[in-house]
Image (cartoon, rainbow, N blue to C red; front, side, top):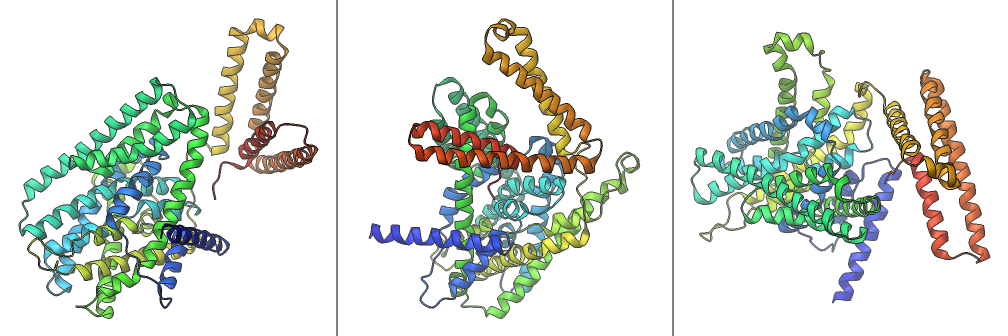
Amino acid sequence: MIHTYVIISIAVLLSVMILVIIGQRLRVAYPIFLVIAGLLISFIPGMPRIEIEPDLVFLIFLPPILFEAAWFTSWQDFHKWRKQIFSMAFGLVFLTSIVVAYLSSSIIPGLTVAMGFLLGGVNSPPDAVAATSVLKHMKIPKKITSILEGESLINDASSLIVFKFALAAVISGQFIFREAVQDFFIMAIGGIAVGAAVGLLFGTVLRLIPSNSNIDTVITLIVPYIMYVGAEHFEFSGVLSVVAGGLLMSYNSHCYLSHTTRLQAGSVWSVLIFLMNTIIFILIGLELPVVIAGMEDYSITEGIYYSIIIGGAIILTRIIYSYALMYFPRLCSKELRIKVPKPDWREPFIISFAAMRGVVSLAAALSIPVVLPTGEAFPHRNIILFVTFVIILITLVGQGLLLSPILKLLKIKDAGSELPPEKQEVILMKRLKETALHKLENDFAEQVEKNSLVRHQKHKLENDMMMMVDKSQCMASTGNYVGAMNENKTVLRQIIQAQRSELHQIKREKIFDDDVMRAIEMQLDFDEAKITGFSHG
């Protein structure tokens, strides 16, 4: 039995990787392509029904995905756009839930407002995984990407809180607003406190107790689960716990992670999150038979009709809210109109259109109990699940596929920072080289004179400084700089390729140890990565 499961798992993973490769060839973001592929596979006769286990998503997949997203979130960008991020993550989620609650209860026969809030809580948050994966390869201004990623980190918490309160209201038949608001703040603040405490604890442990990169990497894999489970145990927000802990540990990582751990953990996390994402998106598509099977009280046509109306209302609410958030403060403040440049009207539209729903919404809908505590069937569970599934398809597949041509049509450019990334890199590296050279000249003058290896390092730093000066001068002309840099990268890569070919020839001589050869090969890989960037595709 175990042997069969292992073979099936390997076959599924191999099939998913092949699908990702096909998606890359077709230039379609792999989350979108995998959902479409899953839908097509689900129509194959005899295909077994696969049902997502909600606890699997919330406990196994969600903590590491949120932790990784928080880890690589820019503190500077998060703080810069914090007002818009928090307004979207909380204000828009609550507004969307209200709109969906009253709209759905008015068009779906028998659906109460409490059940409408349940549907709203499920569908109000854009998905962190979808936002990061789909937008990664698109040319979107950094400001928009930062807002979308920051929002998607936090809005799962607010939407799941709405979902929990709505579910309790449906089951108990009563809802007390004051208690709900009080519980909301307790859950949010408690979750942040647990995440920060766990982050500080493990940061201190890693700093004080000697270990190695393998142990440290494993600890980084365990920590998000401890944050999530710890917060949920005390009935706080597990999502906010992981996000807060991830942001805190990332900011202080230089204090307790060695360079080898950062390199190793980065590679491990990249593969792990990619694997989790691929499994999640193929599962969404494969869920179609489960969703349709529950449509006993409604026709598919009715379900699609309700989904289009509600999905359209969600998209429209987000567009109106995004524009209001950008322009309303300017209307109210003359000082703001004078000091702050006029905003680009295209930004709110892209922020609205790039919001895609994903697996958290589907898992939340599936977590609705089948029966009430009284033993009766949970009312309208099937239509809530179906509408959620269709809205995911509309936003993820529909908007995801249209986003790229819309971006080309709008021709929005990234204002970015005052300095382009290339110039920032030159300035930073120049300052670091100056620091290193100053350290050598002041603290190791004697070693420079006596030790030829140390003296070589001094000469190397001086040469690097001359290169930084040349780069700065070259940047005076953008065209010359881009051309010169591309030519320099081409030459360096060809040199490294020649070295790698020679290393391969040396291997055949069987003179040198394999361990030494591998170390040299890894160094060549790092040298090439400095030129091309540490991209994981």
